[in-house]
Length: 143
Image (tube, rainbow, N blue to C red; front, side):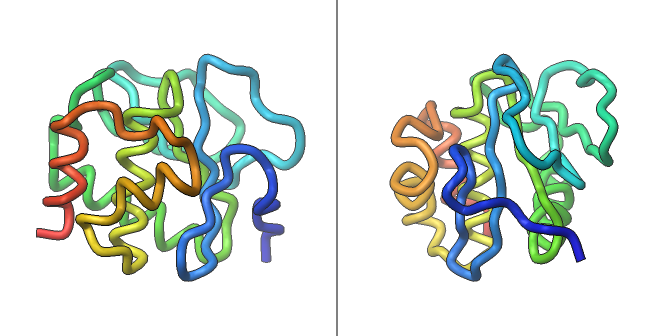
């Protein structure tokens, strides 16, 4: 079994089930410590190669993922893997797209969809989920 993230490390979100997921800004250097075993990169263009398993969800800055079904499948996979792997969710700045994806993981973990944005803002970054359409996406994620 993989050693999971340290819940006190910056950027690590503890979901109600106890799963830990690290959110990160790709514009910043890789944090010290263990690397992800699985990552999902939320970018408008293909991310650079990394030495760990990674998925890419086409998601332009300040917008929404182009393929809602693919986004749901990718985020569901990340949530499942977070039970016993070091999962990282990252975009350029680590707030809008990353916060939106983390809020969707919170919904998968049992947080009511209308409370998930506030949960992520309280437990990850107070400025997470940047646009009204990102908030609406989270509220509708479980539909």
